[in-house]
Length: 437
Ligand code: NAD
Figure 1 (cartoon, rainbow, N blue to C red):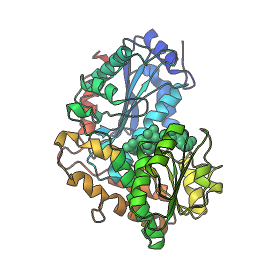
Figure 2 (figure 1 turned 60 degrees about the vertical axis):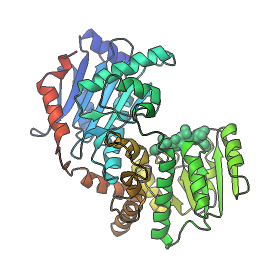
Figure 3 (figure 1 turned 180 degrees about the vertical axis):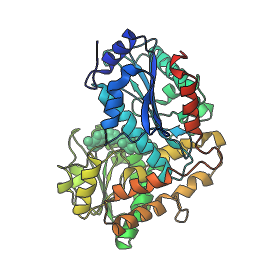
Figure 4 (figure 1 turned 120 degrees about the vertical axis):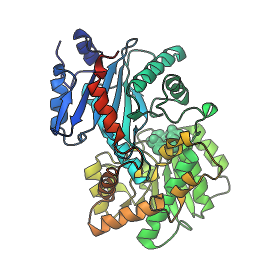
């Protein structure tokens, strides 16, 4: 059989098995400035990447393996490693098409390059994507253990150019299973030296972003302001707490879970706090007439339909990928005079928290606290100011200004290891990684 990018990942597995291919890669050859695939049979993928101008950006390496045990594809997508090893969580998800699988990997790994660079971390950008068969039940703990241990072996085979972590569809236990087979993983369980749940710090970081945006926009603070929060989960609830601590006038919120709303109403009893239970597709809380709106539920909530309905001056929240169409929605917000604080700039504390786990912990950790400060150049407050300033000077939407700044920062070389990730990729190619299984 032949495949195109519109076929399913399961078709790709069958295609590869027919040809005796267990592993393959596509790397970017810097000298010849062209893409190189491990197998000529992958021409359809190389052609797709060459033509894609939206997400593909000469990623240093894309590595894929067919599971020996399950109908699962293991992927590691490495965007850029100038600042250090490519770090980013692994997503365990089912995809309709081969294109969806590759798009998620290349788009999200590039996003991690930007997030880490703006956070001043000495890490590059990467993403893991494990495409699972929608017909197989992966809830069984023994099955999951085997899937993630096998993924751990795959990550080990990449010799450290990619560092994995928790992401959508994975839980701490899965990361523990990866850790049993690989040292190239962060966000490991606390009982074996991991850094624990970062949600409170993520919320605090987003609140710092709000403070910075208010200072830049009107020279004001959160005191006396009104805020709408979508999603009262791990981050949303801490955020409401921090907002009241900073003297906001009122908070209006929504969640799709009745239990979550009840818990929040109990926690913030006596405060000017309103919360309602909504249907999944109900985004009406975002349209509240408030000073700030904080999307803290799911991605893609800011789009052609919702942006015209906003009645706020600032959008600043924790949810990843808030803009459904990053280019157009970024501009739509600018044209409506709404200050959008890019999610990847302010929700960094998840990766910051676990990025440097191997260096141990101190109480009141300065390596963590500097992200909350007013004076460190890479702090959330200062970076937000810088992005707003660039956006104003160049009359560009804030998302675009943040990406351009991140692109620039992401090419700085790691002070000790330089561009070692690229050297690792070169050695994997030289040592015929694809046949070492
Ligand atoms: P969570 O799953 O704990 O909370 C999300 C909440 O949103 C849930 O309570 C859910 O019921 C609710 N929700 C879903 N759809 C909704 C809708 N349409 N309207 C209202 N509520 C809805 O997740 P979290 O850890 O609080 O993270 C929130 C967002 O921030 C996510 O997008 C996550 O990817 C992102 N983020 C989180 C962290 C972190 O440290 N936890 C770090 C970076 C980014």
